[in-house]
Length: 218
Image (cartoon, rainbow, N blue to C red; front, side, top):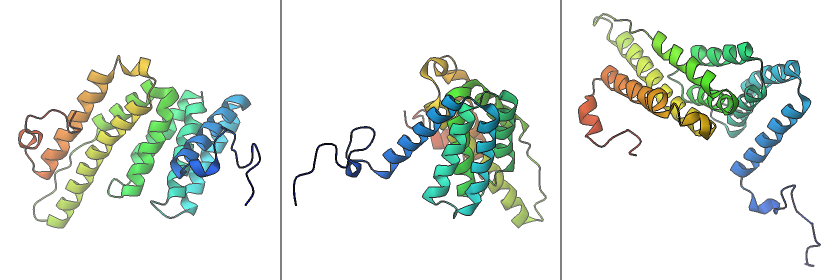
């Protein structure tokens, strides 16, 4: 085989295609999407795209890479949207409609909120906090053991999903905005929901924590 010519097989970043794994390609595509939406500067078009992307997620199997990528793209489109009432409504929709017993739906919700937080960090925190505060424990009679176990699993799943959501929102937030709120509005709520999930499942928070700090081991 002859030597490759200068520029042959090079992508737009100046790297060989073979040097990029799927995760890196995803990041490049999402960055390209964000830049394109910011260049277009049409809120109506951006909102329409987020709706179309959300609808397309149903065309792919749950937990598939393609479906997961589309949910990330939804988050990017919301980050590029400056129509705050619309963004708030979409965040609340994903939080309220998620089946917290399904891993794919939990991951979808987290991807959308985390992506949105790149431009709407304070809004994302506010919406998640409101949702967490609205979660009510509905006692179920012990005579309906299966139903009781179902509700316990659902509540625990919600709490743990919010633990992960806060963490991912923090990772995607602008550092200068995160520092002022990380202790009270991120770490505090992570510990609150972790504690609540342990109580729902009948675990002792003090025993599980073991004096080792946060559940992330930091």
